[in-house]
Image 1: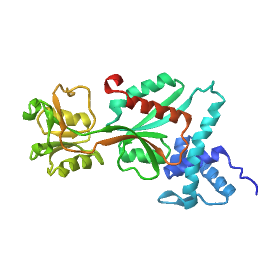
Image 2 (image 1 turned 180 degrees about the horizontal axis):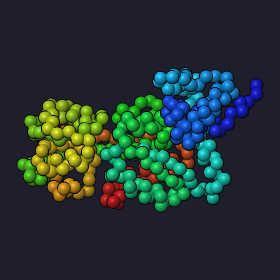
Image 3 (image 1 turned 90 degrees about the vertical axis):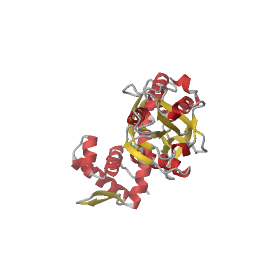
Image 4 (image 1 turned 180 degrees about the vertical axis):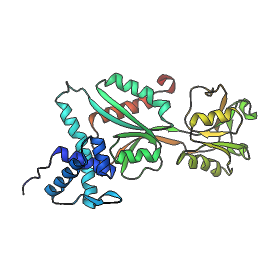
Amino acid sequence: MAEPSFTLVQLRYFAAAAAHGSMTAAARELMVSQSAVSTAVAQLEKELGVQLLLRHHARGLALTEAGRDFYQEVRGFLLHSGELAESARRAGDAVVGDLAVGCFTTLAPFRLPSLLAVFHERYPKVRVSVLEGEHARLKRALRAAECELALVYGYDLEDDIDRVVVDTAPPYALVSSAHPLAARDPAEVELRELAGEPMVLLDLPHSSAYLESILRDAGVEPVIRHRTSGYETVRAMVAHGHGFALLNQRPSHDTTYDGGRVVRLELRDPVEPLTVVLAWMRGARLTGRAQAFAATCRASYARPAAERR
């Protein structure tokens, strides 16, 4: 049986069309004509002898069952075809090229800048681009090969996503410096002591449900006064006495953007901490630059917080 003679360009055009569900969007990304994408995909299907995409006039493109399997293989192949091309330009064991990394929006300001600085110092020839977003957006990005790795919380990750735990983030209560509990020594609280008090909720998908469940598991029904998707907005609202908050990430200072002051109280209740994980698609063979980033990430999270700043 003769080996298929499809081209790398045909694979790239197919992958873009599959990822976007649209020939038009793929053409826009690739900066070619729509007919060029359509022709390349048709030639690829003819060469393979199988239909990969279903064309719906009103609803765009959909992968066939064979197309889905082929797309999974093509994504990894294209990543490594780029690495193969770069290998000719490598000197010794140098790591070079482009790397796309995703990061959960509330994790990004705490670790990402220093992590990128360390990585750039070690691997100056790698160009890192960052996609910052919420949980569902980053999972879509991994599946669409928009990023090779993603730094996210360890909840709600399906079986097609592999991950390694790099840190834990136990929750704590945040109150205004004028709150009666703020002067407590040691700075600890039981959740039942907050029963009936208004709450400022960090309102992000999954995060809000997790934070509310912490209270309900302790027999406390949340009294939510304000909801906001802004982490620093939560802290500022608390500083001005609008309610307490539950958070996981820990700034190095207690001052808010507008000059207010908050106090962190550790929870005496037995609450399971969130895990912070580095995630990638199961079965994917990570490029050398992704492996280098993963190693740098694990080393960074293993260092004490004082050394990371």
